[in-house]
Image (cartoon, rainbow, N blue to C red; front, side):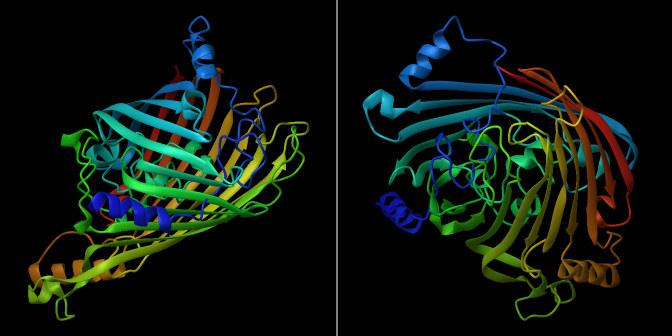
Length: 450
């Protein structure tokens, strides 16, 4: 009964939504859409399986699988010098139930992964912003398991089941061009501050999108907020619904001017988003005890807060398009800001941004040059507690202030199913405490599409 009540409430709360992203028609968020502009020219290594792929797709079953490997090494600074390897192999299967069972606009999706390797950031550098975005959840694991339905001429799209909030909120395909986890995926401080399930973590929830007017859409989501759901010992199979740990609510509105209507495109599109999230769980103050004094000084338990929240802003704008190109070849800039209350969040302020140029080198139309940075400011309340800990208890732990990371990479398409991405990262003030020397990381990412 609790599950039924939960999903009924979620469905009612989540009705603002946006059109199906797989639709070939022009909607608000589609200058990345392969059907409009053939940027998804990637072909699988394993081919068409002697026509089996095509036949299965005709019947409504599509498969995608990829392998990505990072080898990165710290060459100076950090805790020590050294390199680490990690890899991630993902798979996705989608069933078009309109073709299967004549359920119009309905799909069923399932995905999973296999990850292994070691974390260069924690083992070698000592910084908070993980340098490899494919590190984390080193195991075989189920991720998504959801039903998707479109309504009203594909203007409303709803997903219900096992979902990752980070797939739909505070996200952009631009982020995927970077190797550092500070940028790639989602702004890293959001899942640090609060349980905000991001790939490869998924939990029960509902997400809805809606085109509300030309070039404007909204996204609404409600998710189980229990941080224990993604625990490793369950391999993504913890289907319990423990609501006592709070729910996560997220809302985003986006404006996408100059969405292309022809191919090759002639406009310079942009995406401008504002988002809000709220987690209804219990959080502890970074400084105060139950009476409002320094918890370090009094030794009393930290003050409890019911609920935590944050806001974020995203802007990307294409600045230059290659003459006669499809919609994504050229120079695009972006910036992201995330804010949260200082008393209960480790990182109350975060900003990242940079530039992405696709097709910079003549005849190399699918190569991508990416230059970006990410800056996170530690809570001043946390710093106050750390200062008291040094003065009262004689602690030698550093007082954290900020961490800054730069990421430079060039993704080379070797074949339509294989790429190589040399990468360099410079980490300023690792872990924010001014006690670890700045680090310089070099290495490469390698990927295959099966």
